[in-house]
Image (cartoon, rainbow, N blue to C red; front, side, top):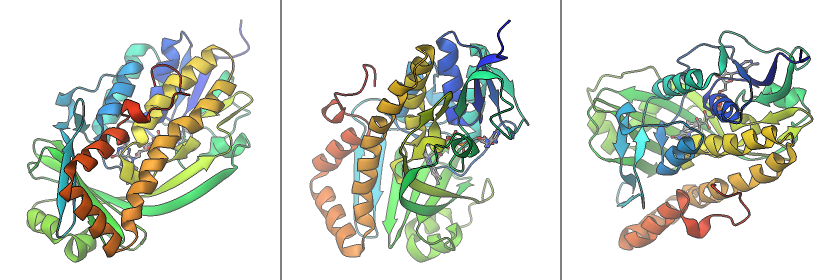
Amino acid sequence: MSRFETDVLVVGGGPAGLAAAIAATQQGLRVVVADGSHPPIDKACGEGLMPDARQAAARIGIHIPDTCGYAFRGIRFLSRRRSVAADFPEGQGVGLRRTALHELLVATAERAGVTLRWDTPITSLDSIRARWVIGADGSASRVRHWAGLDSYRLNTHRFAFRQHFAIAPWTRYMEMYWSNGCQLYVTPTNEREVCVALISGDPHLRLQDALQRFFPVVADRLAGVPAASRERGAITAMLRLHNVAGGRVALIGDASGSVDAITGEGICLTFRQAFVLARAIAAGDLSAYNKTHPRLLLRPHFMARLMLLMDNGPLIRESALGLLSGAPVIFRKLLAVHVGSPIFRSSQLPAGL
Ligand SMILES: Cc1cc2nc3c(=O)[nH]c(=O)nc-3n(C[C@H](O)[C@H](O)[C@H](O)COP(=O)(O)OP(=O)(O)OC[C@H]3O[C@@H](n4cnc5c(N)ncnc54)[C@H](O)[C@@H]3O)c2cc1C
């Protein structure tokens, strides 16, 4: 009998842990997921999945139908004076509550044969009797610390608040409103509800205050509309690790680095990482994952930096939005790049990514 209870123990059953588990099971590995909480697990999130996220999910056997949320056709940027929208070059995005996404991932993992242990916090690496350990325990990862992978570069960190409102979506776009030092994005999450997320550099700026002070158009739309959830906060960061794997431990999702929430690409990244990691583990060699992981981060990091240039004052923001609204074709091309248009896909990535 093997000295290991399982091939892979995944610490954390959020989107990254469940995606990693599903992908590893497809490689014929026995997988256990342990999470200190229990489903459906909620978290402050913009709740938008772009078409590339749905494609990356499908590649590891996770199907996210339009019916599980609200399909949207593209992205719209708005400021007080300007607005520009573009459709995705291919496919549709989907907005869905974080809890709905979690339920879908849990059901897919169960069908794939993953063993799920909820209310099971992991307190050290020594106690884990598995050949491989995947740290999917989020941005404050303890697995990262235990495995000595804590060396990183933090580019930015900002503060976010999210809440749902019971109103029928007014648009088929995911909308991003720009103001002084903050952005608000509105994602339709079903026929009767939208998710509103605020991101800013100010930890004290809360959603209602920001709506009144900076986003009067959205405040007017939401006037008198009942909240459909409580306000939840989170920190969003641009974090890059020097190594994401060492010994028998590999990190995935926010534990392995992150992009600013403004990109809406965090969950897509975890699906793509899961695809690469499962193959690396099946081959018994994590070095391929260590090598490919930074390349997966390149595009979303670049796009985040590009977008955040518009956060550098009203003059830059209004000039950029003026340029984009005057030449919407540029916005359409940028959106195509953002969701992985072939012209920007790195030739150094493995096939399928
Ligand atoms: C404001 C905001 C908006 C965002 N908007 C979007 C968006 O619109 N689209 C998008 O794609 N991405 C978005 N993101 C990014 C996305 O939310 C993250 O990338 C994603 O949540 C990462 O998932 P994860 O599984 O790595 O981490 P988490 O979701 O944090 O999951 C970590 C899990 O690990 C568990 N855990 C922790 N420690 C232990 C332990 N010791 N033992 C056992 N279990 C443990 C926790 O209970 C938790 O379930 C947004 C992020 C923020 C902050």
